[in-house]
Amino acid sequence: MKDVLDTSSAPGLSRREFCQFLAQSAVLSLAAPSFFSSCAHRVFGSSLPLQTLDPRLGDGLRLAPGFSAREFIRWGAPLGHPGESFGYNNDFIAFQPIGESEAWMWVNHESVHPGFVSGDWQMERKKSHIDIEMKNVGGSLLRVQKKDAQWVLAAGAKTHKRFDAFTKIPFSGGAKIKGASVALGTLANCAGGTTPWGTFLSCEENFEHFYGDRKRGEMKISPGKPDLAWHRYYDAPPEHYGWVVEIMPDTFSAKKLVALGRFSHEAATVVTARDGRPVVYMGDDADNQCLYKFIGTRVGSLDEGTLFAADFKKGEWVPLNRRHPALNGFSDDLEVLTYARQAAHLVGATALDRPEDVEVHPVSGAIFVALTNNKSQGRPYGSILRIDERGGDHLSLHFESRNFVMGGEESGLACPDNLCFDTRGNLWVTNDISGKSIGTREYAAFGNNALFVVPTEGPHAGRALRVAEAPRDAELTGPCFAPDGQSLFVSVQHPGELSMSAQALTSHWPDGAGELPCPAVMEIRIPSFS
Image (cartoon, rainbow, N blue to C red; front, side, top):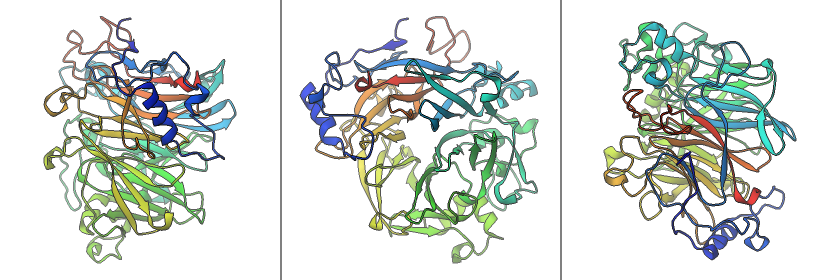
């Protein structure tokens, strides 16, 4: 079908430049599996013209020549259990290998479009609408296998599990939040992470859209924008959301990790410190919010530890607990964690430009942070920040930082969002220009949202190579390499989100003209793996 999969391109890097780009950007670790070899070994094959995509505003999933894609799973796909199906607006994707050809796969479901999901185009907000929507957020735990060189869902009703806004999830450590030790469901699940002990981390981000929010000490709940008004029928306090949720695949269970604090979590990236303890880096995705680090107390657990916020003026991680003089007005440390955003500003943490995904370089250990943008401060293009902990020690409370990529026409990148590394240290980036802004004003030169690869070393460091482009109104999210390193999975999220009715659609991806748009997870084959 026209424009559903489009591999057209326009001149970008020459073949010689692109070969140099990959060869010089690779930071080879001899112990690590190789995603890319030198161009002299013809890894990419003669069929690839090695040119970047030119920005466009079409309605297909466009790929650079030599790349290919197949649909892995889409919204509404049955998962074996009666009444359970793959949720809406798939986002973060992660794997936990089980064996050489089998793995657990986790996919977040961040949000809903009431028109598409519950048929509520007029926003009447009946309970029947909201009940349907509550089943479409959260996340999907999938058992996957590699068969005939492709990843597929494992067969059997007991191999998959949905966690949604009805799933009862306890708070870690027996904590009670607003009088309850168990929360009703998980929602607004954006990015996340994995742990060395085989669990997944799913981050609750823009929770205020569902049940509103309030500041410490306030009784009144303010609705979010947009307001899905679930609170009309379900009395769930906003303090039950905005946490990192740990998913245990072996037991099909979950818990909300109180020690990691509550805010608009975008990511939770775990590294193992020199003494074996876990360290987690997290962004708070809102204008003028902060970056956080958590240092666990025990090996193999995130239930206890210390939460810190970053002060970039001093290059210090500042602890968030009542021992800090600025926080002694809080009743206890649980209140500090519940209102971590307010606490971070009180201790002097630095306000940033929507800190979203955080990833750690597989060779150098440097931390890379996507700062999407801050229009209120005159910075519409965002940037990617690099942080180096003192002595390369993730337990250090001192760091240095610098800009790695500045968004704009010179770099070719605007509004960076999700990040992932290949084993050579090349950074893969998706961006998030809001649907109403795509192709307009300061974003006119950038086309639809896309997927880029950016080297972190060598003469081309920081140069964004556009290799895939999303359909209309959509963004590509959750980039994640499969355990075998031969596929990059991405979510195509909210295609056609600006549609005003089922008769006035802005996108028909992936099925083509006349069809409703549908979010889906795609498996992209990189040319070197063909």
